[in-house]
Image (cartoon, rainbow, N blue to C red; front, side, top):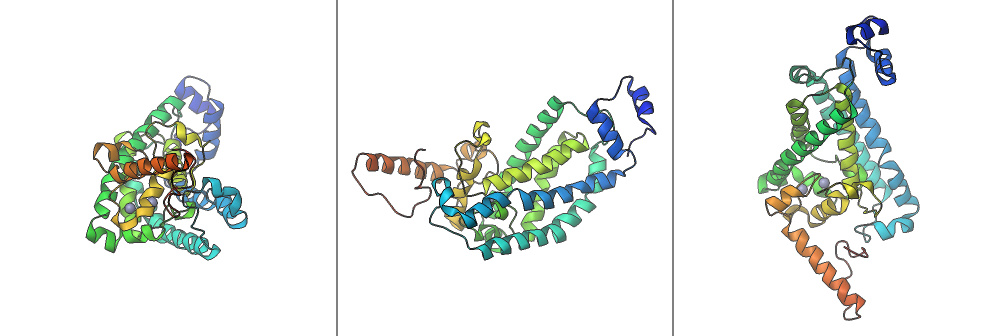
Length: 302
Ligand SMILES: [Zn+2]
Ligand SMILES: [Zn+2]
């Protein structure tokens, strides 16, 4: 909710004309309580997790052969029932766990100083804050995920997320309710350290979800724009973690690769990549037949 009654009052207070984006924001939010603005995140979650994985899921169900060259585990074809069950379980967790968490966490958002007023942040300010949010969340997520691979954490909680040994976009938030809650915490630490505007917070929630969907997509597309992000893990990186499953002590990070590199938890993945590169070299020279069921044997190059 804005402090100004009219656009003219807002312009007088700022000492300049509002930009087009600021005028739009004024019209949208002037009479809306901050609590409602914050609750938009819940709607974004439902929309993003319904629409973003959908095109790839439909293509995989209707025309799987078109996607085979990019599929990380081409031997695995999930039935439609598996997609529906996953989507239904995720939506139920959103409604029963993420929803209440969002609504009750509002005072903390006010406490750290997420603002809703004018002026709007510049693109540079938003980008800088989003980088901080991603780095902080990635670090927190790395350690929580690594702890969840301990015996107790895995058996009681994290096992659910690993039911998909070959993940798909809808399975990104598919997890035990306790994991959904625990992994939600690092998402709030970045905005608490570098609080910004509500629009930046919305964008953070949306981008983080889109990133998780891409990471769990099960496909590695060569022209993906995320390939240009330094130290970005991506689908191939996290797919290996799911492929190995409960025994995995490799690739814990959710977004970037630097934590696994620093703490030495990418050895299994790097060994596997080197092994595959060697096999491909042997295939190229006609030496061996290679293996039929290995992770990522479909890729043309590493
Ligand atoms: Zn795991
Ligand atoms: Zn995962």
